[in-house]
Length: 184
Picture 1 (tube, rainbow, N blue to C red):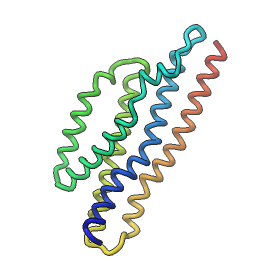
Picture 2: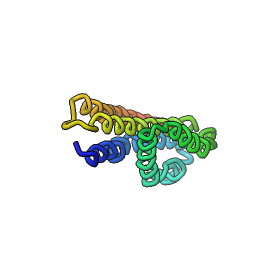
Picture 3: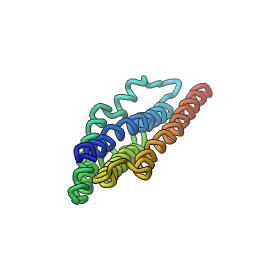
Picture 4: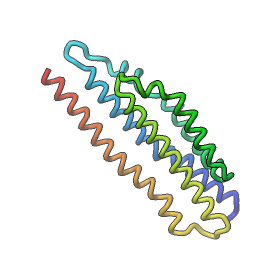
């Protein structure tokens, strides 16, 4: 297989497929936090507007998606160059920049925001590693073997399953919020 195709497959998987699989997961995770924040702050006397909660909690998704794509390229390139320490340095920089928001307790527990950060970074690293695996397994090969297809499909299937689970968690959280408001 020509080298250009090999690298296009690896980087395309890490960036485009990774972004397409991660975007709905991260949106659902943030929506769950928003619903939890709405439930914690909504009382019959003081119901906050959803837009206020969104502004306080939700990141700018175009920025996080752009950073995610860029960091998967950086991860894949550093791993290809056999410089995995770059991943640690990058994660360290991101962690220091965000750490203050993780200890704040409003509008939701800082730990919950930190966990969203971890999930996003874990997915980015996973898609970069599989992009690297695709490059390594298809370099010099004439076709893509079944193991490479399974390796590439597994995180996508996991993302779909996780998305379904998170959707039901979101619906349950919203339902609980409605029940609480009706009781008050």
